[in-house]
Image 1 (cartoon, rainbow, N blue to C red):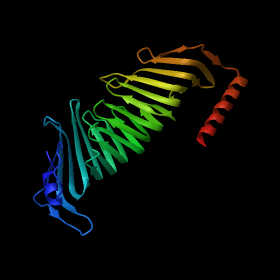
Image 2 (image 1 turned 90 degrees about the vertical axis):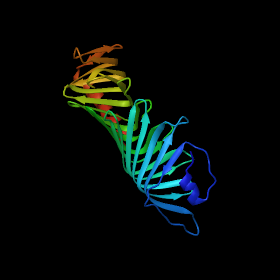
Image 3 (image 1 turned 180 degrees about the horizontal axis):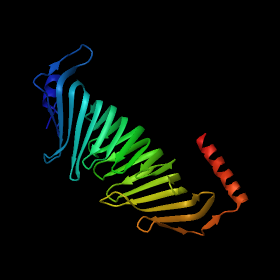
Length: 286
Protein backbone atom coordinates (compact mmCIF):
# COMPACT_ATOMS: atom_id res chain seq x y z
CA UNK A 1 0.00 0.00 0.00
CA UNK A 2 1.26 3.53 -0.72
CA UNK A 3 1.27 6.69 1.32
CA UNK A 4 -1.41 7.77 -1.15
CA UNK A 5 -2.52 11.02 0.46
CA UNK A 6 1.03 12.13 1.12
CA UNK A 7 2.07 11.20 -2.40
CA UNK A 8 -0.79 13.21 -3.86
CA UNK A 9 -0.08 16.32 -1.81
CA UNK A 10 3.70 16.23 -2.17
CA UNK A 11 3.63 15.18 -5.84
CA UNK A 12 5.99 12.30 -5.15
CA UNK A 13 6.22 9.13 -7.20
CA UNK A 14 4.28 6.25 -5.62
CA UNK A 15 6.44 3.57 -3.99
CA UNK A 16 5.17 0.15 -2.93
CA UNK A 17 5.48 -0.55 0.77
CA UNK A 18 3.48 -1.95 3.64
CA UNK A 19 2.45 1.32 5.28
CA UNK A 20 -1.04 2.81 5.23
CA UNK A 21 -1.62 6.47 6.11
CA UNK A 22 -4.79 8.15 7.37
CA UNK A 23 -5.40 11.89 7.68
CA UNK A 24 -8.27 13.48 9.55
CA UNK A 25 -10.93 15.57 7.84
CA UNK A 26 -9.46 18.65 9.54
CA UNK A 27 -6.06 18.27 7.88
CA UNK A 28 -4.49 21.51 6.68
CA UNK A 29 -1.59 22.04 4.29
CA UNK A 30 1.10 24.69 4.33
CA UNK A 31 3.52 24.82 1.36
CA UNK A 32 6.64 26.99 1.43
CA UNK A 33 8.86 28.11 -1.43
CA UNK A 34 11.94 26.30 -0.11
CA UNK A 35 10.43 23.08 1.21
CA UNK A 36 7.21 21.24 0.44
CA UNK A 37 5.51 20.11 3.61
CA UNK A 38 2.10 19.32 5.02
CA UNK A 39 0.68 20.11 8.43
CA UNK A 40 -2.13 17.85 9.55
CA UNK A 41 -4.17 17.01 12.62
CA UNK A 42 -4.96 13.55 14.04
CA UNK A 43 -2.36 11.69 11.97
CA UNK A 44 -2.28 7.87 11.89
CA UNK A 45 0.08 5.40 10.19
CA UNK A 46 -0.56 1.65 10.06
CA UNK A 47 2.27 -0.77 9.39
CA UNK A 48 1.22 -4.09 7.88
CA UNK A 49 2.93 -7.32 6.91
CA UNK A 50 3.11 -8.60 3.33
CA UNK A 51 -0.07 -10.59 4.11
CA UNK A 52 -1.91 -7.52 5.36
CA UNK A 53 -1.72 -8.20 9.10
CA UNK A 54 -1.33 -5.10 11.26
CA UNK A 55 2.14 -5.00 12.86
CA UNK A 56 2.18 -1.52 14.37
CA UNK A 57 0.29 1.75 14.50
CA UNK A 58 1.63 5.26 14.96
CA UNK A 59 -0.52 8.26 15.92
CA UNK A 60 0.03 11.95 16.57
CA UNK A 61 -2.34 14.70 17.69
CA UNK A 62 -0.72 16.78 14.97
CA UNK A 63 1.99 16.20 12.41
CA UNK A 64 4.21 17.99 9.92
CA UNK A 65 5.26 16.01 6.85
CA UNK A 66 8.63 16.89 5.31
CA UNK A 67 9.78 14.68 2.44
CA UNK A 68 10.75 11.37 4.07
CA UNK A 69 10.20 12.53 7.67
CA UNK A 70 6.99 12.98 9.63
CA UNK A 71 7.26 15.10 12.79
CA UNK A 72 4.55 14.21 15.31
CA UNK A 73 3.32 15.84 18.50
CA UNK A 74 1.94 13.82 21.43
CA UNK A 75 2.99 10.55 19.85
CA UNK A 76 1.16 7.30 20.60
CA UNK A 77 2.19 3.96 19.13
CA UNK A 78 1.31 0.29 19.44
CA UNK A 79 3.52 -2.64 18.37
CA UNK A 80 1.71 -5.95 17.81
CA UNK A 81 3.20 -9.42 18.11
CA UNK A 82 2.13 -12.98 18.89
CA UNK A 83 3.27 -12.45 22.48
CA UNK A 84 1.12 -9.36 23.05
CA UNK A 85 1.18 -5.63 22.46
CA UNK A 86 3.56 -2.86 23.50
CA UNK A 87 2.36 0.72 23.92
CA UNK A 88 4.71 3.66 23.36
CA UNK A 89 4.15 7.34 24.12
CA UNK A 90 6.32 10.47 23.94
CA UNK A 91 5.93 14.23 23.70
CA UNK A 92 7.29 14.27 20.16
CA UNK A 93 8.48 11.86 17.52
CA UNK A 94 10.14 11.79 14.12
CA UNK A 95 9.06 8.96 11.82
CA UNK A 96 11.66 8.13 9.15
CA UNK A 97 9.98 5.97 6.54
CA UNK A 98 13.03 4.71 4.64
CA UNK A 99 14.77 3.61 7.85
CA UNK A 100 11.60 2.15 9.34
CA UNK A 101 12.25 3.88 12.64
CA UNK A 102 10.83 6.49 14.98
CA UNK A 103 12.92 8.84 17.10
CA UNK A 104 11.06 9.34 20.38
CA UNK A 105 11.64 12.64 22.20
CA UNK A 106 10.54 13.78 25.66
CA UNK A 107 8.95 11.71 28.43
CA UNK A 108 9.28 8.46 26.51
CA UNK A 109 7.36 5.58 28.04
CA UNK A 110 7.24 1.99 26.77
CA UNK A 111 4.75 -0.38 28.41
CA UNK A 112 4.32 -4.09 27.69
CA UNK A 113 1.06 -5.96 28.01
CA UNK A 114 2.13 -7.77 31.18
CA UNK A 115 3.05 -4.52 32.93
CA UNK A 116 6.76 -3.84 32.41
CA UNK A 117 7.49 -0.16 31.79
CA UNK A 118 10.59 1.58 30.41
CA UNK A 119 11.01 5.35 30.80
CA UNK A 120 13.63 7.65 29.31
CA UNK A 121 13.94 11.04 27.57
CA UNK A 122 15.09 9.96 24.13
CA UNK A 123 14.99 6.65 22.27
CA UNK A 124 14.87 5.01 18.85
CA UNK A 125 12.05 2.60 18.01
CA UNK A 126 12.62 0.26 15.04
CA UNK A 127 9.31 -1.17 13.84
CA UNK A 128 10.73 -4.19 12.04
CA UNK A 129 12.57 -5.59 15.06
CA UNK A 130 10.12 -4.10 17.60
CA UNK A 131 13.09 -2.86 19.60
CA UNK A 132 13.52 0.37 21.54
CA UNK A 133 17.06 1.59 22.30
CA UNK A 134 18.42 4.59 24.17
CA UNK A 135 21.74 6.04 25.27
CA UNK A 136 20.13 8.20 27.97
CA UNK A 137 19.33 7.43 31.59
CA UNK A 138 16.60 4.80 31.65
CA UNK A 139 14.24 3.49 34.32
CA UNK A 140 12.55 0.07 34.13
CA UNK A 141 9.78 -1.12 36.45
CA UNK A 142 8.32 -4.60 36.73
CA UNK A 143 6.34 -6.35 39.45
CA UNK A 144 8.55 -6.57 42.51
CA UNK A 145 11.57 -4.95 40.83
CA UNK A 146 12.80 -1.55 39.65
CA UNK A 147 15.98 -0.87 37.70
CA UNK A 148 17.86 2.24 36.57
CA UNK A 149 20.98 2.75 34.48
CA UNK A 150 22.60 4.58 31.59
CA UNK A 151 21.66 3.33 28.12
CA UNK A 152 19.45 0.38 27.40
CA UNK A 153 17.10 -1.50 25.13
CA UNK A 154 13.81 -3.40 25.22
CA UNK A 155 12.62 -5.89 22.61
CA UNK A 156 8.96 -6.90 22.33
CA UNK A 157 9.54 -9.90 20.08
CA UNK A 158 12.06 -11.82 22.20
CA UNK A 159 10.81 -10.26 25.47
CA UNK A 160 14.23 -9.09 26.64
CA UNK A 161 15.62 -5.89 28.12
CA UNK A 162 19.04 -4.57 29.08
CA UNK A 163 20.71 -1.67 30.86
CA UNK A 164 24.23 -0.97 29.69
CA UNK A 165 26.11 0.53 32.66
CA UNK A 166 25.91 2.14 36.13
CA UNK A 167 23.00 -0.08 37.07
CA UNK A 168 21.00 -0.03 40.31
CA UNK A 169 18.21 -2.52 40.96
CA UNK A 170 15.93 -2.83 43.95
CA UNK A 171 13.91 -5.98 44.61
CA UNK A 172 11.21 -6.50 47.16
CA UNK A 173 11.26 -6.71 50.07
CA UNK A 174 14.67 -5.11 50.80
CA UNK A 175 17.44 -6.06 48.38
CA UNK A 176 19.59 -3.70 46.32
CA UNK A 177 21.96 -4.74 43.52
CA UNK A 178 24.52 -2.43 41.89
CA UNK A 179 26.89 -3.18 39.02
CA UNK A 180 29.22 -1.15 36.83
CA UNK A 181 28.55 -3.19 33.69
CA UNK A 182 25.38 -4.37 31.98
CA UNK A 183 22.21 -5.88 33.34
CA UNK A 184 20.57 -8.32 30.91
CA UNK A 185 17.01 -9.49 31.53
CA UNK A 186 15.38 -12.44 29.77
CA UNK A 187 11.74 -12.39 30.77
CA UNK A 188 10.87 -15.62 28.96
CA UNK A 189 13.56 -17.41 30.96
CA UNK A 190 12.77 -15.45 34.15
CA UNK A 191 16.42 -14.53 34.51
CA UNK A 192 18.51 -11.41 35.17
CA UNK A 193 22.31 -11.27 34.80
CA UNK A 194 24.51 -8.54 36.31
CA UNK A 195 28.04 -7.91 35.03
CA UNK A 196 31.21 -6.26 36.41
CA UNK A 197 31.82 -5.31 40.03
CA UNK A 198 28.46 -6.51 41.36
CA UNK A 199 27.39 -5.52 44.88
CA UNK A 200 24.34 -6.97 46.62
CA UNK A 201 23.05 -5.47 49.85
CA UNK A 202 20.32 -6.83 52.10
CA UNK A 203 19.64 -7.16 55.81
CA UNK A 204 22.08 -10.08 56.07
CA UNK A 205 25.12 -8.22 54.70
CA UNK A 206 26.91 -7.44 51.42
CA UNK A 207 27.98 -9.72 48.59
CA UNK A 208 30.65 -8.80 46.00
CA UNK A 209 31.19 -10.68 42.72
CA UNK A 210 32.23 -10.28 39.10
CA UNK A 211 28.91 -11.67 37.86
CA UNK A 212 25.52 -12.41 39.39
CA UNK A 213 22.67 -14.44 37.87
CA UNK A 214 19.23 -14.30 39.45
CA UNK A 215 16.44 -16.73 38.55
CA UNK A 216 12.83 -15.78 39.26
CA UNK A 217 9.65 -17.78 39.70
CA UNK A 218 7.58 -17.54 36.51
CA UNK A 219 4.34 -16.85 38.39
CA UNK A 220 5.25 -14.95 41.55
CA UNK A 221 8.35 -13.22 40.10
CA UNK A 222 10.10 -13.83 43.40
CA UNK A 223 13.74 -14.87 43.55
CA UNK A 224 14.27 -18.64 43.34
CA UNK A 225 18.06 -18.79 43.09
CA UNK A 226 21.04 -16.47 42.92
CA UNK A 227 24.45 -17.49 41.55
CA UNK A 228 27.48 -15.28 42.16
CA UNK A 229 30.67 -15.98 40.20
CA UNK A 230 34.24 -14.65 40.21
CA UNK A 231 36.03 -13.17 43.25
CA UNK A 232 33.03 -13.74 45.49
CA UNK A 233 33.16 -12.04 48.89
CA UNK A 234 30.37 -12.15 51.44
CA UNK A 235 30.58 -9.67 54.32
CA UNK A 236 28.59 -10.25 57.48
CA UNK A 237 29.40 -8.03 60.39
CA UNK A 238 33.21 -7.91 60.70
CA UNK A 239 33.97 -11.15 58.88
CA UNK A 240 34.41 -12.07 55.19
CA UNK A 241 33.79 -15.34 53.39
CA UNK A 242 35.78 -15.74 50.16
CA UNK A 243 35.12 -18.15 47.28
CA UNK A 244 35.01 -18.34 43.49
CA UNK A 245 31.30 -19.14 43.36
CA UNK A 246 28.29 -18.96 45.64
CA UNK A 247 24.83 -20.42 44.94
CA UNK A 248 21.95 -19.18 47.08
CA UNK A 249 18.66 -21.13 47.09
CA UNK A 250 15.60 -19.28 48.37
CA UNK A 251 13.64 -22.41 49.33
CA UNK A 252 16.33 -23.53 51.79
CA UNK A 253 17.54 -20.02 52.70
CA UNK A 254 21.09 -21.32 52.33
CA UNK A 255 24.17 -20.66 50.20
CA UNK A 256 26.67 -23.18 48.85
CA UNK A 257 30.22 -21.87 48.50
CA UNK A 258 32.40 -23.38 45.76
CA UNK A 259 36.02 -22.91 44.75
CA UNK A 260 38.24 -23.18 47.84
CA UNK A 261 36.08 -21.11 50.21
CA UNK A 262 37.64 -19.61 53.34
CA UNK A 263 36.57 -17.32 56.16
CA UNK A 264 38.61 -14.31 57.28
CA UNK A 265 38.21 -13.38 60.93
CA UNK A 266 41.77 -12.31 61.74
CA UNK A 267 41.72 -8.56 62.63
CA UNK A 268 44.89 -7.72 60.68
CA UNK A 269 43.78 -9.63 57.57
CA UNK A 270 40.33 -8.02 57.79
CA UNK A 271 41.90 -4.57 57.99
CA UNK A 272 44.05 -5.26 54.92
CA UNK A 273 41.04 -6.55 52.96
CA UNK A 274 38.98 -3.51 53.96
CA UNK A 275 41.82 -1.27 52.84
CA UNK A 276 41.97 -2.94 49.41
CA UNK A 277 38.19 -2.72 49.01
CA UNK A 278 38.15 0.99 49.91
CA UNK A 279 41.02 1.71 47.50
CA UNK A 280 39.25 -0.19 44.70
CA UNK A 281 36.01 1.74 45.32
CA UNK A 282 37.90 5.06 45.30
CA UNK A 283 39.68 4.32 42.00
CA UNK A 284 36.48 3.12 40.29
CA UNK A 285 34.66 6.23 41.50
CA UNK A 286 37.15 8.62 39.85
